[in-house]
Length: 473
Ligand SMILES: Nc1ncnc2c1ncn2[C@@H]1O[C@H](COP(=O)(O)OP(=O)(O)O)[C@@H](O)[C@H]1O
Ligand SMILES: [Mg+2]
Image (cartoon, rainbow, N blue to C red; front, side, top):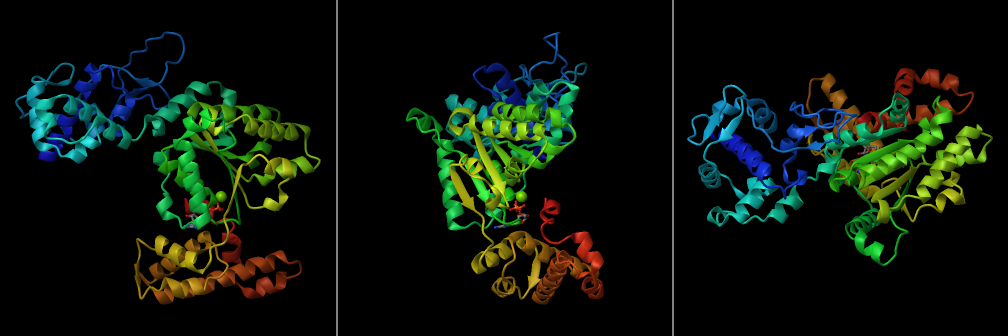
């Protein structure tokens, strides 16, 4: 109960301090607070309804003063009955008519808060961190600076509401709807994989460190005129972690993740495609700093070589030109391309990337590590990842995930949620059998063998491991 009171008082203090101190901006509010006060954009934010410019849509943002009511407090803090939680305190008051909750004695509230809050709480609230640092009388209780709290706080550009607001502002007419087939924008908060969940090679880690440093020091790079940086190409077989790594980078660096699905370029609106490619890059620039991820990059090469539709060629040329015109240093956009078929890329495509990062199939040690990572949450008796790694030569990270999934589902048929090493070995065997079936399927005239093999259903419905990463997320 007292924690609920503390949460609500923190909220009340924050809204009050933020409303008064004009030097504070959105990045000083904890994400759960600012979400409540966000207006404009797709989600509309709070219901304060001040549509100041009568013309069209208004710019998304947070406007002062922030008003604390039962409903905003509930949404921000998760406390069910915010007013009930603080109504006993001497320094709170609720206006019956408007429902606004205010602090009648802010100083008393500050003292009360300072006595109960720990540094961790303050570190997560830059608004209050600044306030308490500036007010010596409580400042001694806390050793948290405004900068520290701001640095730790997730930036507003990483919030879904912020991204939606920008997209809404940018893509207003109906015809833009089909843009969404081509591009998917994800807020870092919506990415659930982190770099820690991924087992990377030394090379991959070194490259990622390098790019993180480059992002951090892009002002310096710009000063010395170094522009050819920030375009990466991830190369490797399906299921080796290319998409996951790009997403994890977005999450770990708090950058929006803009994904272009190149195969969608061939969708029905071919005439619009070149324009849409242009717009995609505009989106990325507007959302910057962000990561622009272009999957299936080999698609570019295919269309350039063959006799494709002229509109398609135009679209691909626009794409290549757009890539030339975007820069990490000038636009704050990190471009990552990915391909399963590097052999199909021509020089023109290849030349556009300044770092090529190889995603090989994992070796023995990596497989053992991946097995450790993906089983972290599972109970497995006599688990020996080394032994499984030995038995899974040639499998990718995605394959290993599929093996584990199989083992888990198998065990569930016996109502077991604790696995055994035996379960895993059986699942490996099953996987290999299925893999054989899949390969057989591709050899002409082997159809009878496939039928005799029996398990067509399984092979057909799961389609082998090239697909499975689609289901994994
Ligand atoms: N090196 C790895 N470490 C941990 N998990 C991996 C690794 N490689 C692949 N995976 C897992 O396999 C799945 C598919 O990976 P994905 O990134 O989609 O591969 P790709 O884009 O290369 O086809 C994801 O769930 C991912 O977490
Ligand atoms: Mg992928």
